[in-house]
Length: 154
Image (cartoon, rainbow, N blue to C red; front, side, top):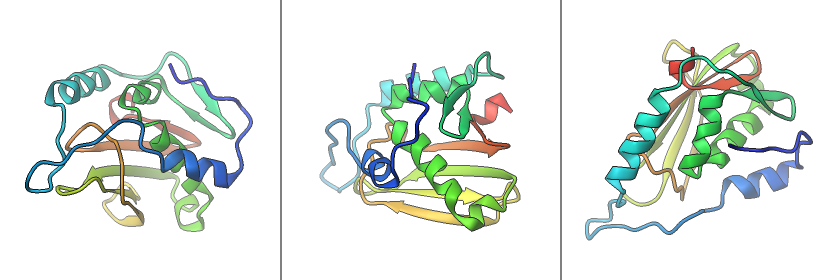
């Protein structure tokens, strides 16, 4: 379970948290990221089991669900923090319902985090040069009314 202090760290600290690599990464001879397919399948299976939430977890002004708390297993607390930090952007704030899509790049360690309005229109995009996200296909998240949750919890 992820345990957050309810006080929000300064923006600089949040950025530093979101840019750290938490475990070693490897590339194959073609420059593609090497994934632990068994771990990825296990994580995807675990995340798919969440439906609704029994408890909301708080971080600053925001809440997240039990399913999002399981993201800790992906060593991806940085993803939760980035979505919350990006709520300070005016374009993002205008969207009452947001779809966040993290997609690791095919080559290298990078990834793209995109915020959409729920109708497929891109609101904001952020590129990561390096990420440790362990699921090759990435993940989709929903944010609405100050709550971050998995699509299966909608």
